Image 1: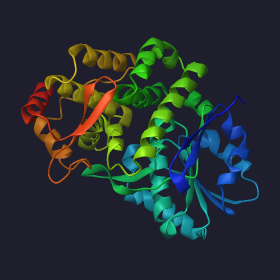
Image 2: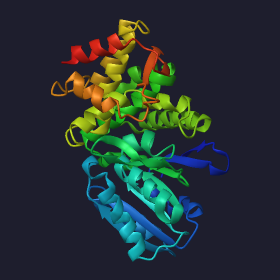
Image 3: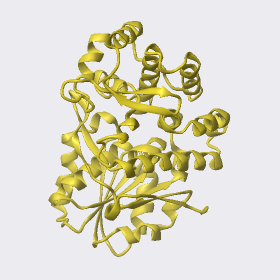
Amino acid sequence: MSTSIKLTVELGERSYPIIIGAGLLQAPGQLVPYIHGSQVLVVSNETIAPYYLELLTNALVGCQVDTLILPDGEKYKNLDTLNLIFDCLLEKRHNRTTTLIALGGGVVGDMVGFAAACYQRGVNFIQIPTTLLAQVDSSVGGKTAVNHPKGKNMIGAFYQPQCVLADTSTLATLPVREYCAGLAEVVKYGVIADVDFFNWLEENIDALLARDPDTLAIAIKRSCENKAKIVSQDEREGGVRAILNFGHTFGHAIETAQFYCDWLHGEAVSAGMVMAAELSRLLGWISSEDKQRIEQLLIKCRLPIWAPKTINGETFMELMSVDKKVLDGSLRLVLLKSLGQAVVTSDFDAKCLAQLLSDKE
């Protein structure tokens, strides 16, 4: 096992570590301090479980270990699937000292975190993200939720894990499309808050696409550092944390319009980031050159850079109007004042937004 990297999300008594490294699932001692009772429920999905579930459960000696395997896919991230977790916890008589472990990507992590927030009014949980997107984004920060047919992540809670264990070895089995979807969130950190990281990504994208271990470790570490810093300042998204949603208002509209079936989350976010960057350009806030740099980097990541033409401007506006960033009837968007500086604002020219949505048709 290679040397691990340990970061901390600083949230006072709710602070927790992010442990990053190759082969961490081979070192179960890393998990022991974060399992507080004798009961553990490991929740995974049909894709990930055959690779890693037995490895993990064999390591959890001395505990009552139960397992639950969920169907795989964003379309299953709903209340019906969430209930399967509660059913299992109740059938196996788990008490309030139990620990839930999410072994999988963002869908599993979001649902297990939400179940942990609700079961007996809150039990411990651990994130073991196995996709790039989950390792750099969704497993960190305590956002948990399920989708509703009318809106993505509209039912959920802020609930922090005990720890995040990101075993980079799991990325070796990740399909190319899933891996590239995760790169969208990596690029996002450079665009919104870390221009030096963006420059580094432009220079190292080929090595990142080749999954070079050293390059990948740097990208994951830098992404987690950026997110941990922002979450530590604003745990419940009352201010600066909202910049992490850059591209997501447009992206969530794409996912909802497609009933969470056609595009992966990272693909929708990629297109959403280009739309947000283009709106920033139309407003005169960023240059055409900066917008093109964002676009070109996402193209190199093999990601879509525009929404499907089947979603018209009226549908976009309708879906964005139920976004969580709508406040007192005003649509707030995360836009760019410059490359590396994002802002959350409702103070933009609506005509420019209308032009953007018209142009996409």
